[in-house]
Amino acid sequence: MDGLINIYKPKGMTSFDVIRFLRKQTGIKKIGHIGTLDPSATGVLVIAIGQATKLIEFMMDHDKKYEAEILLGKRSSTYDSEGEILEGDSQKPSNARVSKVINSFIGKTEQVPPVYSALKMGGKPAYKRARAGEEIKMKKRKIIIYSIDLEDYSYPLIKLKIYCGTGTYIRSLANDIGEKLGVGAYLSSLTRTSVGNFSNNRSFTLEEIEKNGVEKYLLPIGRAVVDMEHVILTEREYSKLRNGMIIEKKLPKGIDICAAIFNNNLVGIIEKTDVKNFIKFKKQISLA
Image 1 (cartoon, helix red, strand yellow):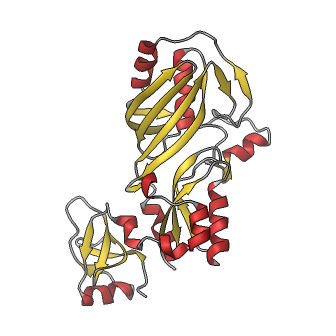
Image 2 (tube, rainbow, N blue to C red):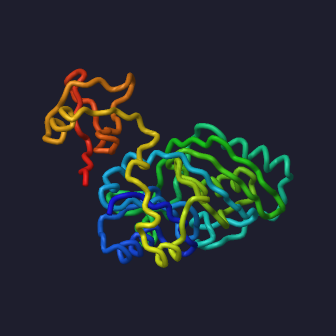
Image 3 (tube, one colour):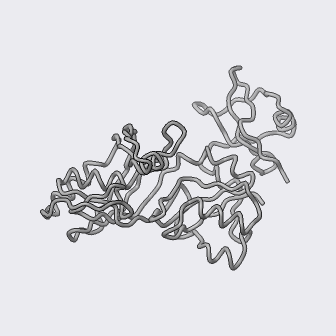
């Protein structure tokens, strides 16, 4: 069983809980996910099964969309409702002030990830170090936010639609908005509505999968690389590549890696070599 599933993750489950569920349903251990969702968040969680797990690294840079609710006037140790909640400032920012502050986060910027996150520090998730009482200083990371739409503001609640690049923490954004407004804030609700070309209106619940079986909802492995440049291989080229050889073949200008197609099937990811105009397999997908 090889392919992708667009899961609608429920609130209260970790991303790995979903993997455990699918392993139990399928009997397959080789399962991974693209982009972690916090337990308190809901929405799109793309799952790779079998050989599709080889393509996870090429899907991690997908842009994402979210619907978020931010509560003003309080702060959280985790930047969301799961942490220790502390009182902030009770002043009520005006609509104009809220709109101006929110818009200031659009574009390329730097963001400090939450201490309570799965980011590795010295090979150990930051949240585990934080829970153990370690003093942690997270480094700033470059992110991009393409748009933030203010859907509603009725103090103390702000409702936003966010379109951003990979690596953006909406929890940190909520905290930063609160700090910039001078009143404090935390993320009270979050739904991821899309990851790349996977959207929540075409996602499936765990209940549906448990009732009807995984295979009904399995997407072709090629969906993982629909946004990647493709190169068509001849039978001779494919034969050489799958036997570990390099071949002479130009990739599109400015492209270092491509999806390799043979007989209308995705057979792997190819990359440039140090030899000019020669390519090799970076990842190989075995045909059934």
